[in-house]
Image 1 (cartoon, rainbow, N blue to C red):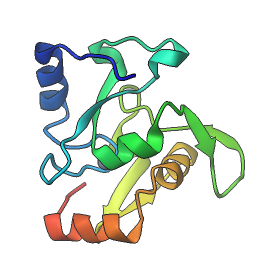
Image 2: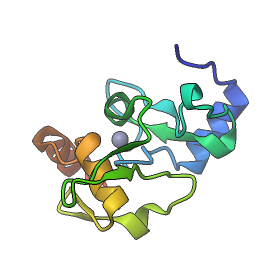
Image 3: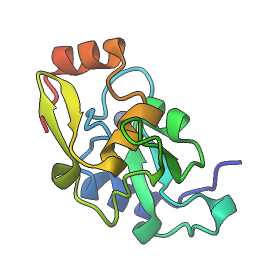
Image 4: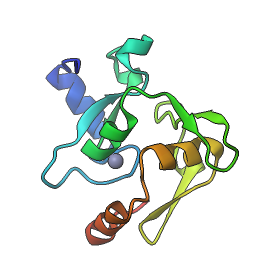
Length: 132
Ligand SMILES: [Zn+2]
């Protein structure tokens, strides 16, 4: 069950994220509103505080769910997902013609689990001219 996020906290999260998804950088526009993601899910002991919350688009939040790790497709090792509170996006990814290029094991696991380079998502980023 999703935790209730008080409005001032939600606004702080949105502004910190510059109104875009902290995983795929999609701006907050479109049919499905972005959501507040617990980076470490409540069921794993994550708190509903600014330090553990991220702004995520509907798709990224659905694919991530309460997961903390996935498989790095290059090494087949269990690998933590990107933690947007502790890691900088630009250290782990770059954008190339709307495709999100993973630069680290955490990034590869995140791209795979969140299906960041699904063809419809790449197409959407092209149309929206999403920048890295
Ligand atoms: Zn996203």
